[in-house]
Length: 102
Image 1 (cartoon, rainbow, N blue to C red):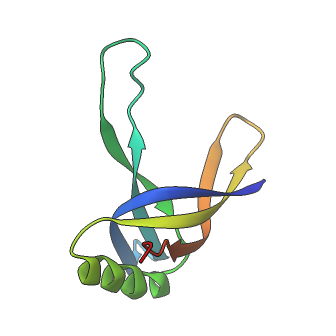
Image 2 (tube, rainbow, N blue to C red; image 1 turned 135 degrees about the vertical axis):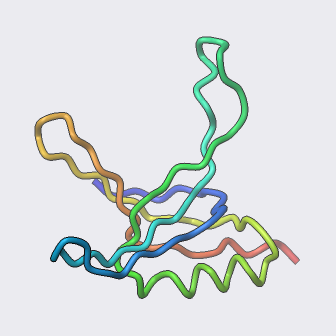
């Protein structure tokens, strides 16, 4: 299932290396989300890491955040998958900065 949502992108990190003979190459984008305040024990926002493909995606997002001087509002296309055993994963398919009105 794929859908689009607007998120405030707060950070990005990449990893491209081999650990114990296994190759890893990924980018994670950190987006702000509301904390669950339904029980009265939390309030505000936190960041959640979402997968966004290989480390090749890192530089463009880093540069966008640097140019803006901080978090950036983006429209993100997400895809959710499951392994059928209760394990769900949310993956970024595309990410586009939302342009501010002139």
